Amino acid sequence: MKKRYKALAASIAARFSDAVQQVESSCGEVTFDVSLDRLLPVCTALRDEDEFGFEILIDLCGVDYLQYGKSEWQTESATDSGFSRGVNREVVIPDPVAGYDPRRFAVVYHLLSVQNNHRLRLRVYTGEANPPLVPSVVDIWSSANWYEREAFDLYGILFRGHPDLRRILTDYGFIGHAFRKDFPLSGNVEVKYDEEQGRVVYQPVSIEPRTLVPKTIRDDNRYSPDIKEPGGNG
Image (cartoon, rainbow, N blue to C red; front, side, top):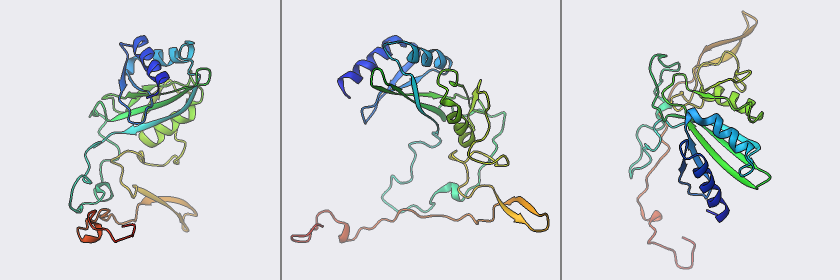
């Protein structure tokens, strides 16, 4: 991490010590987790205080960490299940009484300070709330308007205080939230033109679920790092 970014991280940690926690980065970017209940005060201070001056929200996106770090790719044999959500249909609309893992859903903010030439990444977890809920930052950065609508549409994350929270990429009859990790790859419904009714109608998806096998292990000598053709590239 560059010296000036180390200084920025130290300043943020000192200024918001009770509300943020720095996240280790492998690419040198400054990232902090922010407490859900302190999100708006922290964002307001990051925008208004001259030491920080993050006047621009470049991007905002949702994240679903369901089964994060648990991968069948960490194996020396070919997978026999493929991408499970292409085969197993999950509950699209979850039980409204059940809560989520507190660290399943998150919202990530990418900030830019033109005056100080700094970039910053913030992340806030939505907690156990069902549906996921975080405060809107539209009143702090107006560019968050459509970004928050996108996160709502694709992840089902609600933004308290948003002036017009509705779908932006899918249509009004879409069921579920397509970027959630438990959303089936083939979707739930499809549309077609019904000649008898003279209009476009919804119907259950007709694509048959199938198991994909994306990984094949080969152990023959073509792939041995110890065998090289003389004068060749491999």
